[in-house]
Length: 133
Image (cartoon, rainbow, N blue to C red; front, top):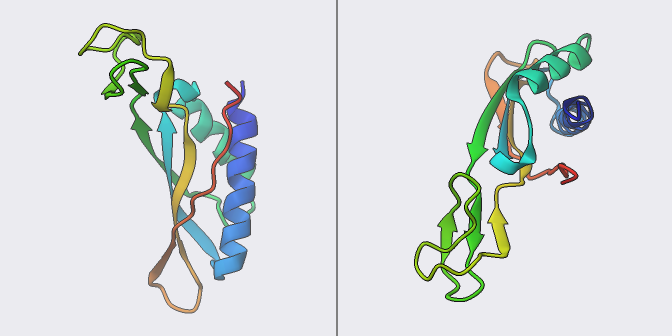
């Protein structure tokens, strides 16, 4: 279950960013996860919830956006969304060997409270975790 290591990396990023921005409570974390990252959202949520207990991220929700797999044709150079693991170019029929997206795992935003006021604060991050695949 690599979701545990992903959740730990995610928590490390969130704690570092919360300290940098003076956040006392994390409300939500927005993630972009590629379809080929092999992340099970329920497992990631469970692991993150367990690891974040007794931290400023306790109770934070993970908002996960799944990104499609996009490949670029080696022959005609068009980019296309891969469906059903079919990496054949829909325009020329040549096998696409270049993966444009689909393996990402990025923190794109953290919403939290500073404690000074009850207004939520947001910070945007571009931190990424390698899915190891």
